[in-house]
Image (cartoon, rainbow, N blue to C red):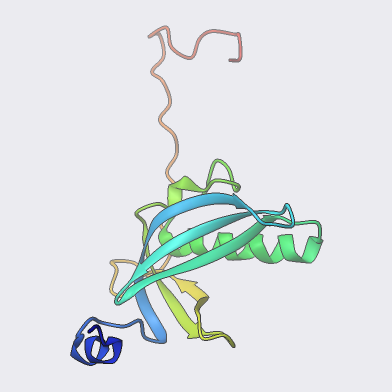
Length: 148
């Protein structure tokens, strides 16, 4: 007979803890809610399991979109990403690492409360953007007047 209480008592698997955790973003998925709103779901791997962050990028309410953009901006800065090509699919965050502050919500699920640059990194600030390399003169590149 299977007794789940015995299995749980014998288990030594780590569990997710509240507080600051090192995290790795392992997946970014664009989804549509039942109400028809588009959100981006980040999968964050932390010690003891996974946590999901839903960011309501396209929502009819301005304040919800503003909050979502701030959350996305905080995640980008914490991961050292200075810009993303598409806020609806921020794939630049995949495999990036940051620290997250986790807390349980009223239903007992872990939620990300804050992002920060990983502690113990060489720098505690976001790296400065680097300039794109310019083509050398006289090589035939960059001399075409047609802008495409």
